[in-house]
Image (cartoon, rainbow, N blue to C red; front, side, top):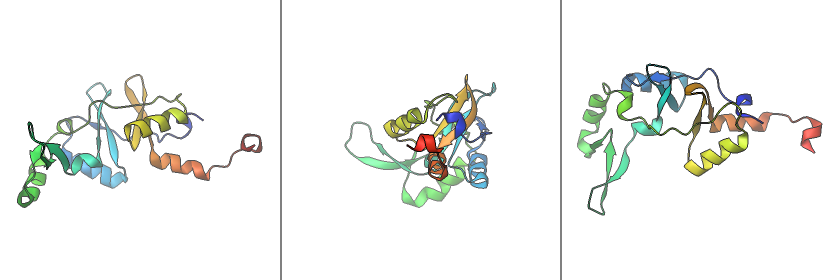
Length: 155
């Protein structure tokens, strides 16, 4: 089976200049956990996911200590609302992942599973050239459970 048989299309993308507030709104309205990010040419330049909107532990340079950080700021608990308010106007390019792992329409499901497992990913943009044409998520793989295989393939 090939990626083109299970990918979600058309893919919802956002421009790298889009605000984080608009990105969050798009994700919530469409019930999706990630958005491929495109540049002025419509080419994939990053991905932003719901995990980019929550705190992550970051190590302090030259120290063994790790503290939460959100949107690139150290996160004292009394300033969480201030950090979110300030981040609303920031551009997606400020927090997106730039080294995006992708698949093509002719890649196999084995390739998808291998990349998801190896890299701990929940979604893979599907590209044609450098432009996103679809997306494959773990949810799409769940739908495979509901497909009926022809008798010849089931044996």
